Image (cartoon, rainbow, N blue to C red):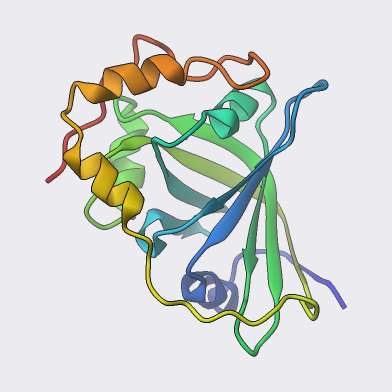
Length: 190
């Protein structure tokens, strides 16, 4: 049976840390499309305190999460165990976007290891509801490795290439505001 937790305690932090991926779900206030995105790279997620989490948002194919958060702030994160110990953990909350030029970005950035190339933002979530579920129907999978494709792609891009990506990330697929075209280029990492 599902259990609701009052905070992200040590056992939940351990469960989150063991997962190689998580899922992010957002939706616009009216109409439009629901967005559900898988996220990988374990070093891109952090529990900041008992009710706050954050993850590094990398440039990719769209800007749906950022646009939806700008629209209404609603976000759900889901961690799902694919090992013999079945469990699903959902964090429901209100998210906000921190751009690399925001003062708070440096404080949140300190919770992650060395930043990857292609950092678009940090997503910070104030968690309002924490609930788990059994996950009995989730199949078993074995992790082979992190997929290096996005890291490889970003590491080969000239810094100026992000200006074009920002341009393509100005609006969601439903026309909601995404990235500001005056957004500075992300910091270049080696």
